[in-house]
Length: 193
Image (cartoon, rainbow, N blue to C red; front, side, top):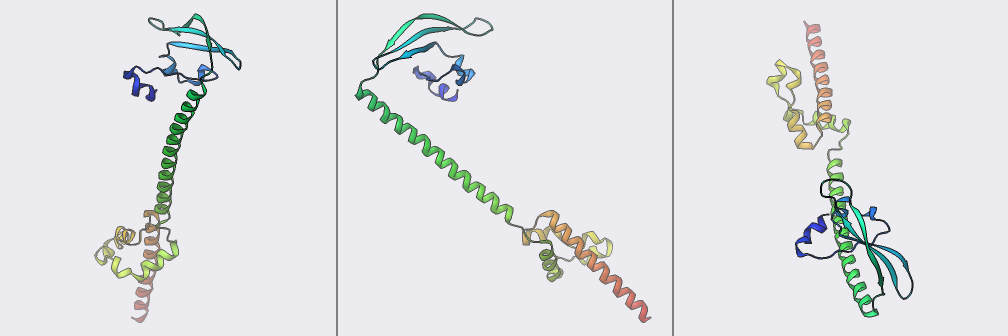
């Protein structure tokens, strides 16, 4: 339909050759003026019944009115060669468009996969990384009030390109370690007293 609308104002005639009219989009079929039903074809000519497509004034399906029979001769060799050459050029241009689109889609897909694979740090590797760099991400002020705010998760996520869920799971594991360590230190200090 878009193709038809793009050059409708030029008043160009379009011929659709299909085994059945159902292969043509309904929006296009509603704009058809004539239908040639090919009855048979021989080496020397083809015979087609010509129908005028009449559209209802208000609603309903279009109907056909038989206009006559058309005898069609095959094109000359010269015309046929020109047509084939033009068709090949047009088809090659379409294929080139498709190849470019597929290449672009492949590049985009590869970029998506690359983005998805980034941040594929395992949980254990993340815990080790945070443990090694803990002073950089530790917020001692918040540690006194609330353990969940003790580690700057957003900064850790940015620095190592880690997904949010993984980063919070790593944080929770480190906080458990810190709580255990603090509990051990307080129990040791009580034993000394």
